[in-house]
Image 1 (tube, rainbow, N blue to C red):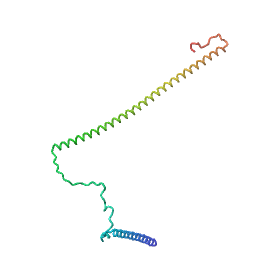
Image 2: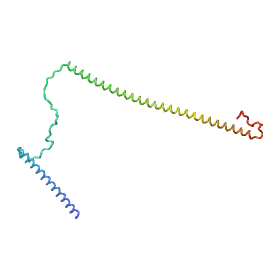
Image 3: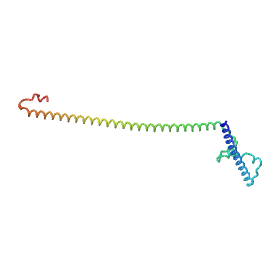
Image 4: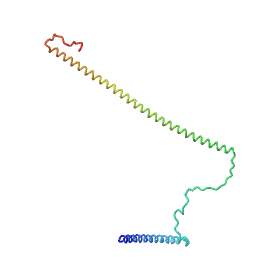
Length: 188
């Protein structure tokens, strides 16, 4: 019950506020209308009773024509065209269309050729890069094999030197320098 009465009071307050705002708005509109009428009368224009009571016209109703509006001229021209003239105009239009079509086709072919050249150029660049990479890998491979064989030869030479030194030491230490080595020198 209490809530209903509070709701009704708030509703009445809102309605009262709306009606006050509406009346203020109506007063402003009425004052503007009176001001317009007064200004027109001062300017020497006669204002009829209908204009004063009617709503002010909107912008849409006073639409002005565009600055560069095209006006249709209503002229009648007697035109007699012979079959030869019709055929000549038709042939001219066909030639123009054919010429236009040929130009478009030529432009398309030029664009296709340019695209083809670009693709060939990029393909050529890629092939050159691939060839350079292959050449570089081949050089690196050769260099690797060369260094590997050089390293193997060096290690083999070191081993042979160590074997020769160890044989020389073994001979100089043995009590029987005159004796033959148990391993023939051919097999060494």
